[in-house]
Length: 394
Image (cartoon, rainbow, N blue to C red; front, side):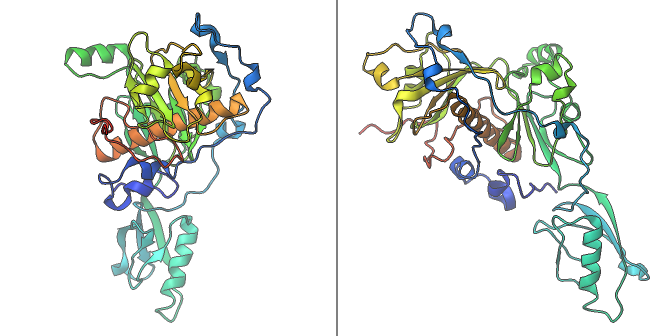
């Protein structure tokens, strides 16, 4: 039995079988976009963009989100029960009472005379004491309960993307990022890719620059290139239940259009594509869009570069546009941002949250697709338009 734990935002949509009929907008509404305290790098610090050399218009942003040294320490928290965990129960002295049962989806244990005892989030000792308290209501002497954990199903981590065996894995012990990737068979190597290509299987290598780890709706600053290519164990943090690890395709040739556009989504990259062309491919901006600070974010998630384009002037022919590259993120904001660093963090959190929602939904429904899916601007309240059909022309 696979149960998605309480704190995972994807659980709110997929628990109890409510999977296919819901729009991704329901999921996006519960994803939190986390910002940091505003640094002093403002829009005035950006070089002006004249259009002749697009690369010169991009500014590298120093992110304020840093690795917490505590994440590298072995977790000391006691195990707590959750739905799906198997336990062996016995009332000491009553041999016939011995049974193996499971924590139900509602977080309760149904045992002996008990109508259901809520143990979700309790340690084994706490659960044992609660069971004894509840049983004592039915018998004269306080019973002694033996409780033995037999299997862990409630603590799970998501390992998706270009790994050998993507999926949702039970977390039975403290697990680091490298151990999690190893559990999933490791990243796809060039030899694996060639073998699969020869067999007609269209899989792609992992893009370590765009790989990410999300915890409680927030992007953690893990540099996967330094971890997997350079062996930097300072990036090898311990995971927590519900962490979401994603390694996207390295050969994807898409541009991701997010924010205040009619249909936030990845669009196929074509040579010479510009920011305005990408926005047009998402069927333009919506009412309330702030078109003077349209951003193009490029590069790795830990060392991003940004250029800000005045889209309103671009479409009037009063300002030059910027030429895009594959895997650029084009973001149309709903309001101006004073600080560049905070703006980039909002964009990146929106991007990884949307990618996680789409990859997670595919993993749960067992419908892995080749594209990156439909992207939802976080908190926008935009209704999703099916990607197969453009908005009607009136």
